[in-house]
Image 1 (cartoon, one colour):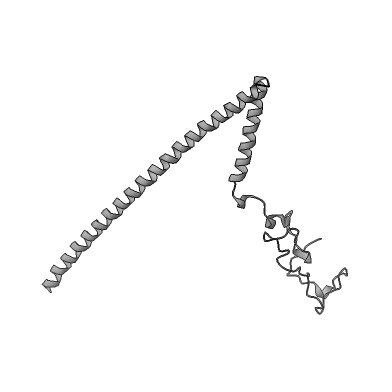
Image 2 (cartoon, rainbow, N blue to C red; image 1 turned 90 degrees about the vertical axis):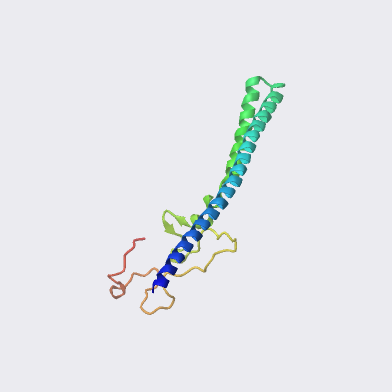
Length: 167
């Protein structure tokens, strides 16, 4: 039994040593990856700063070219309008497609689903293949005990547990 106790001590020492080696390996790998990502981020930031200066120089060139034939204030105003239009187009291009209205959002009007009551949805699905399902009638056709459309329901047909909706 004493031999096993001695082996347990060796196992614990081996496990601790393996855990320390694994921690050091993971730490070194993360340090190397972080160094690469930091370098990439610095290059992107420098690229963005240079692009900003290029855009400023281009705007100045456009303004000076316009100032040859127009008053300075008009050239500056036209340059600002051009830059505003470019910014608006870029903002629209940067928006994800999920934030734009979809056909599913157009189906609901004032909180009511347009497919209820047997009518087809107003908008087609994003696939453009028409309605995703056929329109459903409010009640099963030919069901026993159902009143004709437009006729008042009989007293026996009214279920007190069903919610009542007014048209």
